Length: 543
Image (cartoon, rainbow, N blue to C red; front, side, top):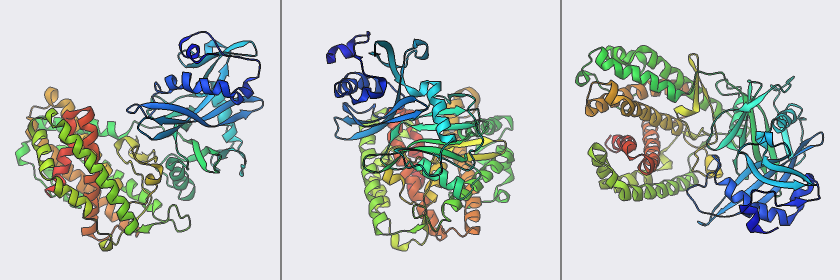
């Protein structure tokens, strides 16, 4: 078997008299499979996260059986090594099928096993594999000490397999819907540790009975050669919903901005308020209620309550050390400053290299960012933990409107994996709860401006400048109401956010971090939108 033929020929070129169950014991096959087949296959997958780097080679770190009643599939843990001197791990379950009807464009490799022509495919495309995994979780014993460990919650009982389908196009994972009631998320990019999504989901659901997140039903974990527990899959209830909060907000905001013309509102006469001022609905002027509608503000209030309840659940643990609240200290401060300064320098380079793409207000704000770079850097360095009295807790970590489902008049919080750019260790660091609030505030800011960008020329009879002015006013009332509701609920539960001045400091620090983080993405992929994080940065450094 030549390496060259394996890569270029469409004919089955590898033949073995050994059964499928022993195929991966064949070193010659594995070596060719990794270098000639999987390198081409993996870079084309949606869930592959290394597209901006140069793949050097793939190693098979570990393989294991996923089996039941004589049916055998293999799970592969692949280490993708990059020219840039780092690596990522991926999970790929594989199956051997002889019926070509099972595979259309999903063939990984044609081959002969014991004189039978067939194909290796990604096993998730096979219903028999999906059914097997469902049944292994549904029949899991309370204590599983095998290499591949299946676990089920007390909520997942008396269930039988009926159907399965893909949930839809996802970037980084693959989710399977079972019986139109349950969702199993296969993590594709994996880490040598428990996935935060699994940890947080199980903790909130089983230990705290937090109702506004999909209930934890079960999981699949691998105990690797180093005795580390690696999360491969997470089973949760499926929440019937009306879409995510991002789409919901865009629809609501379109109505709000359409009212400017419909109700003949003079933007220059709209009453304003200070940023980060805690408000209740009764504090919002009648002109603003008339413009934006009471429904929008009552939804913001509900979302603030659900966010507070999530943080109260996460901050009320005193046994499980992964979730017990912590105070600020020197170690956390060093970690935070190093992270911030590294990210800030990276974004500064991106702005300097891409400023030619900007014009108008975006260019003015980008120049302000460069002029005030030392001031912004000082903001990140001036983190004096000795003055902070609040607590740090495990947080969502990547909290935005796209991670929240809308159902009737309520909200459900999903996807606790954490920041995609962060290491697994960094995602588990206890942070101020206001980090999540800042993430959501940046998401509100985005939704308001995205609505203006998407609709301005067709629907709103006003200049960009006037619409930006209206956007900033609306943003202040939305975030003010959220903050007022959130802080009151947190304080009632005795979760310590620190004194008011401390809360404002932490919120602005986290908002600045988030806006600087966003800036790199926008300048690289859609410069027209760079004005959104630039405006966010300007708000903070001038306030």
